[in-house]
Every structure is written in structure tokens, then in C-alpha cells.
Length: 111
Image (cartoon, rainbow, N blue to C red; front, side):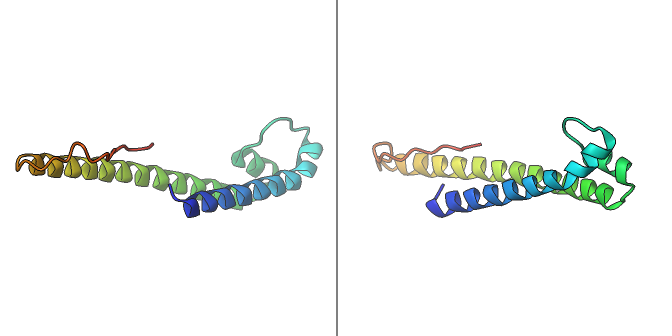
């Protein structure tokens, strides 16, 4: 993971924290009026407000989540194939007496 990637992740995380706080602050009047305690789902907010946009938002978020899961699976497959390709290439070079095992290269996949 590069420094730029870490910075991007930190920025995205900070932005989500701000949005989450703003969202919960906007729900405080709704919670107080309806004696709601604990976490509220988008479905529960829809039930309290009757605003269909919360159902649409829930559906869109589920779609995004599924897309992320699909991309993670696809990336996992690509990493496994890449690692196998490098291993096979190293074995091929070893068959010609090139010593690739003492190069200090470590291959791993991170989840």
C-alpha cells in the first residue's frame, strides 16, 4: 500500500465520519419525537417519515455493497493468478539454472 493510498483512505474515512455525524444530528429531532433509542435503519426512518427516498437510498447502498463484494472477489482472483504466474515464471527460470530463490522477493496477498 502506497503513501498516497493511505492518505486517500484516511481522507475518505474522515469524510464518512463527518457525514455520519451530520446524519445522526439530523435524526435527533426524529428520535425525540418518536421515543426511538439505539440505532435506526433506513427502513425504520422510512416508516417514521414516509419518505420514499430512504427506501431508494437503502436499495442503492445495498447495490454498492454488492458491487464492492464482487470487485473484491474479482481482485482476489486476479491476485491469485498473478502470484501463480510469478511462481511459474520463477520455476521456469530455475529450470535453466537461474537462481531466483535467493533474490529476496516475497509474494503475498493481503485481504
